[in-house]
Amino acid sequence: MRVTVSRKAHFNAAHRLYRKDWSDEQNNRVFGKCNNPNFHGHNYELIVSVTGKINPETGYVMDIKDLADIIYEEVESRFDHKNLNLDVVEFQELNPTAENIVVVIWNLIRKRITPENDLEVVLYETPRNFVTYSGK
Image (cartoon, rainbow, N blue to C red; front, side, top):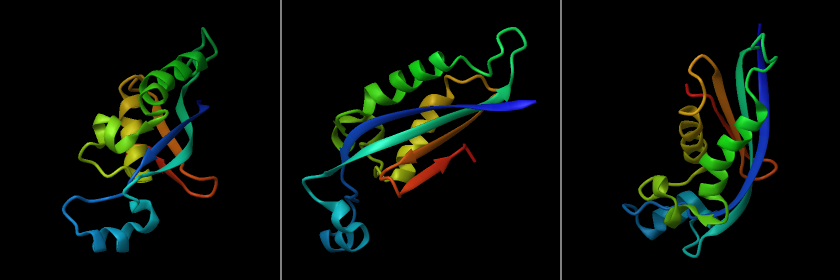
């Protein structure tokens, strides 16, 4: 039997969608207002889910406190109240789209989750726009 446990978290961050190798016109055409040279921000919501077998000794798939600590250490402390383009090393050369952010977050958390458990990350950029990544 496999069960999924999930933890919600959030962080606030600014970013700019922009490619250095494109003209201003092309960046504006593709990214629109998200290409603001002065950046713009989001109140990101995050749901991290771990799926695995229930440990018969503890009754846990994973201790939710451990998952909360991992999310804080790998994501919240690194991204919260930061400019993703300027302050987060993973986005120095990677456009911080929601799609790229969710993959970066998944990779940061994945290394801290036991290999036999599955990981899925859902990132809400706005209440209506979200992306999901499970490593595939």
